[in-house]
Image 1 (tube, rainbow, N blue to C red):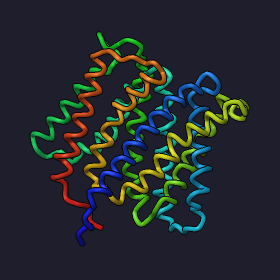
Image 2 (tube, rainbow, N blue to C red):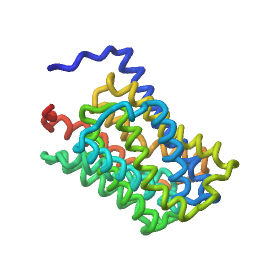
Image 3 (cartoon, rainbow, N blue to C red):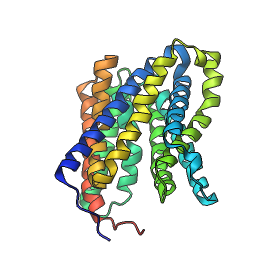
Image 4 (cartoon, rainbow, N blue to C red):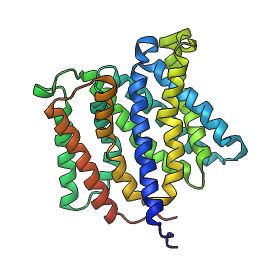
Length: 293
């Protein structure tokens, strides 16, 4: 059955919502980095996911839905990938600028997109992505303030992001926003032992809870809610192209909020990864058969 046509007004509005959600996500990541001196990276991850889970559980009330065992397995895998992704990403932010961390992390979803490569042009995107990645490694002129542990953490987050995409697609089949609420709740449970071990009672400090709640809303609850409104009215390929702008928004947020400057070499690396992601989304998605419903 063919999809219903999308009205131009709805498309423009949906694109605006997705871009706004991306901006909120990267702004939230910048503010989260400000929590590191008080609770550390794992503590900030725990606060973000726990508070976001509380908000999403109240909004979507997943206990009203029943899942079969197969769905539960996918939801648990989805939540575990999300929790690990956030732990690794926030650990990377401790030593890597936000824009670089997001670009390195983006190698995960980019690898998922490039898995459908078939033509020479498609392999050209792989070469471009690898070149961009090389520009961001702490070698030669791109060294600067980028630590190798942070690079490895960001790449680990990217691998988890790939799992998040795969398991998230399977978990959401026949589901709805309640799947997201359950996934974030499981992610919070995954992160909590690490946060408690490193931050302890500092997680309960009332002085940081408002900032932590703001991070949870900006990074999780608000973007998820905006995506839920936008996705029914936006083609999946266009959504993928828009998401390719995440590293650029992260670099801008890091510059404005955290005053993290990037070298021309680093900016070129981020740009190469963005172009590779957009190119892969356009050409590979067009040559990949649609999934069987």
